[in-house]
Structure formats: structure tokens, C-alpha cells
Image 1 (cartoon, rainbow, N blue to C red):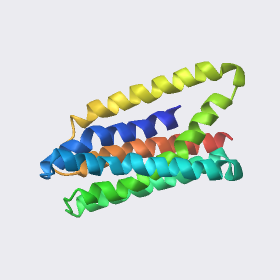
Image 2: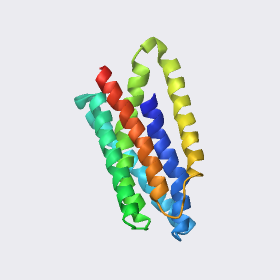
Image 3: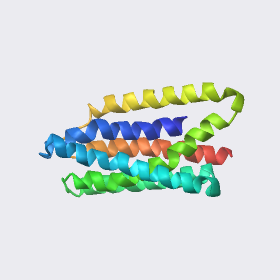
Image 4: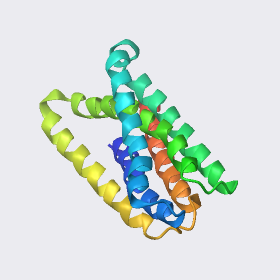
Amino acid sequence: MLLVGAATATFYAFLSGAPLVFARQGVTPGRIGLYVMCVPGACIAGNCVTTRLAHRVGDRMMIGIGQAFSLGGVGPMLVLALAGWNHPLGIALPLMLLGIGHGLLMPSALAGTVGLVPVLAGAAAGVAGVMQQLLGALAGWTVGWVPHADARGLAVLMLLLTSASAAAYAALWRRA
């Protein structure tokens, strides 16, 4: 549930913080929507891939591949921000990998959450949903505390959240 919650929180941090950073970069509201739309669009593409691959490679491997894509998106976003490339594409393009990663990992992670003990699937779904909403709300609140002059603060927050999700995955893998 921590894996799912932290991954969701990363996405909520993006949804809360990216429009603020884009606005500071002088992007108009209509264009902000286009840049933000890239990430959920990539998530949809990741979901489509998941429907084709999950039964072949298994849930744990899909989650791992999704985590790699997610870190592969947030990491370059931070590097570009630290390098001073203060452009909306410096956020939107790397985070398309995050979207693909979430499309790969979330279905498998949620299936694993509710499929562990079939008798408790409803309770597991409820707790997972609460964890997603709680950590997502905390991430959205935390965005208000990071600087918005450029993408550095948002990138650090998103990297921390993605790393927490990856750490939860690593712990799950070790237990198995």
C-alpha cells in the first residue's frame, strides 16, 4: 500500500506543483493544460502496454519496470532543473516517462494489493484507496512549501516520493 500511495502522491505533487511552476515560466493557462496532459496521456499508454504484458511477465516484474520508468522520468527532470533549463518541456518530456511508469506499475500493484487474500479484497481496496488519497493530499499540501521559481523544488519532492515507492517495492521484493 505504501508503494501505491507514494506513487500516487508523486502524481498528485505533479498535478499540484507543475501549474505553479509553468505559470512562473510565463506559460498561459491553456498551454499549462497541454503540458500537464502529457503525463496522464503517457499513463494511458503505459496502461495499454500493461494489458499486453502483465500476464507474460508477472505483476512484480511489471511493478519493477514501472518503477524504473518512473525514476527515469523524475531523475532527468531534476537534472534539467539543476542545469538551469527552465522551460516547460524540461518538465513535461521527462515526466512522460513517469506517466508510462505509473501506467505499468499501478494496475499490477493494485491487483497485488487486493489479490493477496481474496476474502479481504474489499478491505484491502479500501485501505489502498485511503492510502492513495492520504499520501496524495499530503503531497499536494507539501507542494505549497517548496519554492516555485523553477522546477527544482518540485523535482526534489517528486524524487523523494518516487524513491519512497521504489523502496517499498524493494522491501516487497526482498520479502517475497
